[in-house]
Amino acid sequence: MATTTAISWTDHTFNPHIGCARVSPGCAHCYAEEFARKRMGLDVWDGKTAKPRRPISEATWRNPVKWNHQAAVDGVHRKVFCASMADVFEDHPVAAASRERLFPLIEMTPHLDWQLLTKRPENVMQYVPLSWQMRGLPGNVWMGTSVENQHWADVRIPILLQIPAKVRFLSCEPLLGPLDLSDWLDIYKPIEAYRAGTQDQIPWSRQSSFHVNRLHWVIAGGESGSKHRVMQSAWAYNLRDQCLTGNVPFFFKQWGGRTAKSGGDLLDGQQYHQFPS
Image (cartoon, rainbow, N blue to C red; front, side):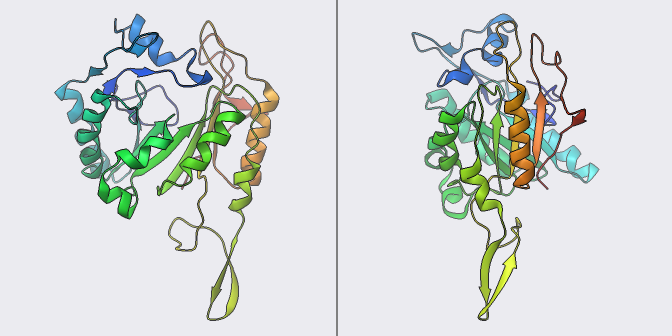
C-alpha cells in the first residue's frame, strides 16, 4: 500500500490487511470499499454475507521500518494513518493476525506517530497487548475514532476517552449532521491542583500528571464521490468554533462533492490544518 498519500492529515498510510464491514451511517459510501472493488478487484467488504480479508505482502510490512529509518535520519517524527482500507480493531481472524504483527511493529518504529482510527473503540483495550493495557498505549500511538453524527459521538467518544493514549482524536468525516461536543469540551479548561496546601491553576499539558481525559485533535470534512451526502456549512463552522473555544487543534480536510477537491478546504478563506503539539 501507499508510502505517500493524498490524505492531507498524515504522511504515510499503512494497511496490515484490506477489507472491513459497515457498522454505521458513515460507512454507507465508503471510499475504501469502492476503491478495493473497482481499482483492486477485491470483494472484501461484508454485505449480506461475510467476506474474506486480504492480507498484505511481506514487502509492505517492511515499509514502516524504512519510513522510521528515514524519519530518524531527518530528525523528525512522521505520521502513519493505520488503516485507510480496514479497521485494525475489527473482530475478524485476519484482523487478529494483523494485530499480532502490527503492535510489535509500532513499538520498534518510535520515529513514526501511528494514527490508529477505528469505528470500534470498544474493542481497543481488549485487543492491545497486556503491557499496553497496564502502562498505557506507547507514546507514538494516536488513538482516534470516527463520529459522523451526534448519536455516534455520544456512543464512541466516552469510550475513546477511557483509552490511555497520549493523543486522542476524532475523525468527523463524512460529517453527516451537527455535532455538539460541549460535554467533552468542558474538561479542556485549566484544572485545579493542590500543592503544599496551596491552590494552583495548572493548564493541561501532555507531560503533566494532573491532566484529565480529553480530546487532543478534531478532523472534519464532507463526503466525496458520486453519491456524496452534502455537509451543511453551519455544521463545519460550528465544529470549528467549538474547537477554537476549547483550544483543541482543528483540521478541516475538505468540503466534499463529486471529488475530494471539489469544494476546496477553506473556512472563511482560511485553511485550518492544525495538529496536536
